[in-house]
Length: 357
Image (cartoon, rainbow, N blue to C red; front, top):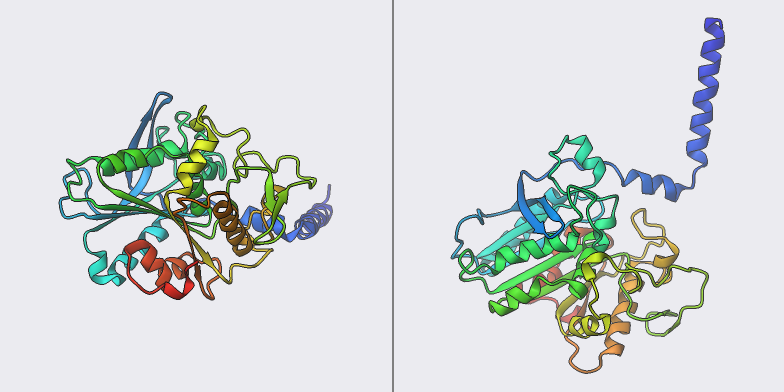
C-alpha cells in the first residue's frame, strides 16, 4: 500500500470516528465524561473489617483522631458526589466551619472517599484499598475488592470511631451531610444503616443532611403523579421498585431486616432534606435519567419535594424530618452547604426560618 493510500485510509478512519462520536446522544457522552478518575486520593485510610474481610477506606480527617480529641464536640461527615472528589468537599466543609464562627468551634471534619476500579488502577493503589464498580457505592453495594464490604459497612466504621468515648469524650453531635451522589448514599444509609445505634447509646445526637440527590428509596409501589399526589406505578419501567429505588433485592448489608420497621425508625430520625430551588434541569449531565429515576419525577427539586410529601403522609405521628429549600441554588455543593440553610443544618446557625417546611 502506497504512502498516499495509507494517509487516505487514516483520514477516512478518523472521519468515521469523529462522526460516530458526534452521532452519540449528548446525554451518553456527558455520562461518559463523568467517569474519569479522581484528581486526588486521600492520604489517610480507615481500616474497615467485617466477616467478609478487611479493606482500607481512603479518608480525609481534620484532626488526628488516632489520639484522644477532648475538645471535639461536633463531627461533620461530608460525602462526595459522583465525581468522588472528596478533597474538594473536605476543603469546602472546613471553610464552612470557619464561616460558622463560634458555632464551628470544636468541629472535626471527616470526608470518606469511595473509589472506583478505574481510580485504583490509575493511581496504582495497593490491593487492600477498597474500590467499587462505577457508582454502586451510592446504593450500599459491596466493593469489588479487596473484600465484599459495603459502603454502608464503611460508614459504620467511621461512626464507630466517633462513638469511642476514649477518643471523643466530649462529642455531642454527629452531622452526616451528602450532596448529589453523596446524598444518595446517605439517604439509603439513614434508612438501613446500623452505625447510629452506638452513637445514640453514647448520648451523641445524629443528624442526616441530604442535599439534592437524584433519587430516593420508596417503601411502596406508589410514585408521584405530582409533588403532592401519588398512585401505584403502572408505567413500563419493570425495575422501578428494585433497590436503590425501592425495597426489592436490597444489598447483602440489609440482611433479613424488616423494611416496615426500618421505615418507621427512619421517619423519626433527624433528617433534613436540603433542596436547591434551581436544581430543575431535566437534562443535567449527572442527573439519574434511568426509567427508575424518571419515575420519581422530572428533576431533583421535584423528586425531593415529592419524596418529602410521600414520607410525611405515611407517618403522620412522630414524624421528625424536615424540608428546607435553598433559594436560587442549582446543583452545586458549595452553594448548598454554605447557604443560610446549609449553615443552620450543619452548625445550628440561625438564618433559615423562611425556607423551612
